[in-house]
Image 1 (cartoon, rainbow, N blue to C red):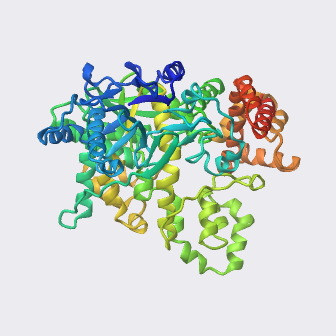
Image 2 (image 1 turned 90 degrees about the vertical axis):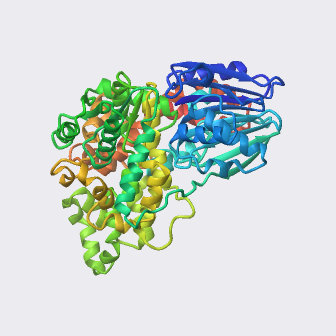
Image 3 (image 1 turned 135 degrees about the vertical axis):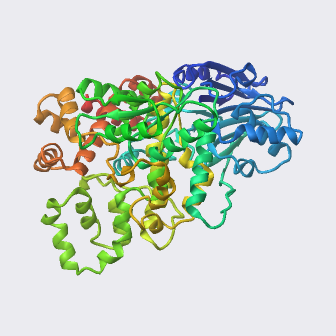
Length: 639
């Protein structure tokens, strides 16, 4: 993995170098910066060496004919096989790195005047890249179709563009105004969905987006994965087992040591079992595992991780979850600086601590991200599957259960009956909205093209397209790369996704959550492992609210005042929400208040840059000045 930064224009080299300095954590092994002779572009890379440590693989890479220059972040599954195939066909590939493969594939397509999006469709993996065509003076920026790796860019007023792997690095090249309009979307999702970022002038590439800049004009298209998998004998379970194993084997094909996260769940268990099998076949030791330990036995999956590690013969490292308020706040601040935007999933604190610990042992780590979204792991999918039957219950009974009775139900039951009062569209909105404060007008960003008809299929498709890249994958990338740690996610290989996608959502839930995945890995698991209930990777948010609120603002009255400042919520409701979140442990309310706390902290981060922001605003149109003043006011309220 690497960090990328660059800009078109003749005066940007020093700013790009500053951006590379801000990306040093993503690429601790090497730095390269290239400028076009005419001054049309500066392109830089911070490199984390994972494949081909030779000098020929240092970036930016230049094609043998000198026409193309590439900066690449990521890995391509089976890259050595593909490079060998290209060489056999006469292509010159000068190193054995993933980047060299991508340079050859894109270069061949553009020389033949073919669509580069179609050329990339066959490449499974995780990537973001910038490619400069010295002949046509075109800049190509791309992101993998699943959205595993990030890339941000900004259009300048003079028609030039700048780009970087992280928002903070991009802000070293161009000034950017905070975008307060993302607030309702952030509340609903606990993150800012692409293409927005939290800054007016900066946007994310959407998953699978490929843009071409030339002479101040931008063309956008989408990379759509080619379906390469062919079923063997109609046995979906066997097909899935083979596909996961191959994807794991490809992810382990690196020139550095590889470890893996072992949460004790089904997804990481599947990856661990396959990884140990691959290692034995190669005559290697099983990769070391890493699990986070909690004081609360109900949250702690360490016993299950130990059971699986012993069964597979893996070495297991225990990482203690952060607990003290200063430690929690430090990890949260680090996470927000990495994102450069508000990010309200409290698990970011755990992932920061985990990334710091794992990176001391290995630079590459396999993870089970995507398993819930592909194979039906979340309870809300089961709720969607029985929604039709629930609609047949008389309305007065449904309304009564959604009233006071709902408070007596477990969290999942309460959310189900409250969300199931109207039609399927209302249920979709309610079950996917993470904000428990109705006064704040939280709004989901729902993409076009979700499946028609079945609510369960819509829910899973929404998570695959929006929540997975914006939440879990973004968190893994930022929290790993903050410490030069590359997370690889084999369950999101193209063939695995194709097999999972051919099964309707209800098919994944037929025998309980993840029935297809469980069947595929059952022969490799210890007795009883797959029968245990799901725990999840979630911190004690109610407890953390009290700890951080006290650390930041002191007494309870002051916490409530600062948390709800300038929000349209009555004083009596503010106190009730705080009690429900912290004393009664209502998880949805606690998540909503946590999102507010994170928003306040993000505003303090913005306040550290307010001098630069105000200077920029004075040179901009009137609306930008107003936005800067509003940002200052919010920042001071949060301090």
